[in-house]
Image (cartoon, rainbow, N blue to C red; front, side, top):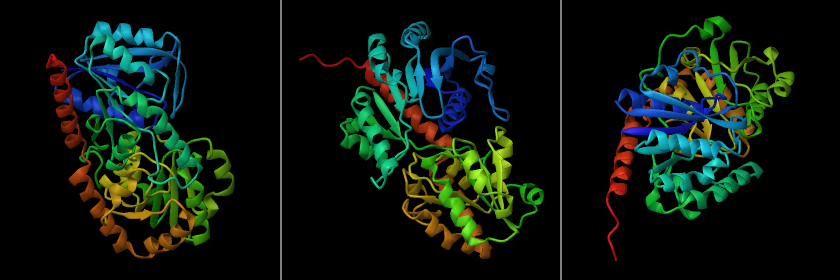
Length: 391
């Protein structure tokens, strides 16, 4: 089967990781994959990330660049001719299925028309973060995104979401229930696994707490930093911040090495990120909105005790004892109670780390979730081949 995958190669974000991991696994299983992605016109070819396979290295993969004016971790602005380039490319490629890992661009809204004209089955993975309750301005803004997209998603053959909560929300907004499939994010449990790490020796730390993700308002990192500073964790404890974003400079001005905070910035190398997780005792995700965090699943797979808010599907991942679930309101206050607890009781973090990895093995392995995707592709192709009965 030939899959035309529309996704992102840069800038680095969860969508990039999702596209890379899924397409590489499909290639390993014998599928033909064409990768279509946005790139500025006349820009040099984009490179893969160190520690991972580059899509362009596979003889099975044909790569197509769609012209864009701007792209960020959150959204993309295509040029006026991008839809024409996409249609021409799909007509030439003649795939069995088009799968769009939606990049939040105007092109998302015309994809159903393009694929309908070419008689191609169209699948979407809908990533935008959300909160299960409208508790603040950030969650309200994300809910509006779902309201805008729902009428267009109804015209896709199938929409993949990461949780039952997300599915229920789209159905309430008018997407036919039969068109929404729950296939969670998944991680390679062999690659992301417990193992040795030099992190603590390099930091000269006894206990290490880690945040990994964007430094943006919706991630609520400042609440974590405030709680850390007020908890007076001691010189043997370090809070490692992995990631970059618009708030990086301002936050670094107020929280630094004197507070036991270590800023590593964006870590491109995947093996290095895995070593950081393996050396951590606790992973913390204080977000106000989320989808289903790959960073959280990666930490869980590495056997790290995890604390996350119930934004998006993250609470669903940790419920039932696989981790600690916080309310999105009052995160700093909740963390001031929990941080000293995890500092003083090692056996608690050890037990939760074991349960976290077991939860990934039970529900969130990449292999299991790709198998579900394969079944979905087969069903959609079969539906297209069956002619509608005449009335």
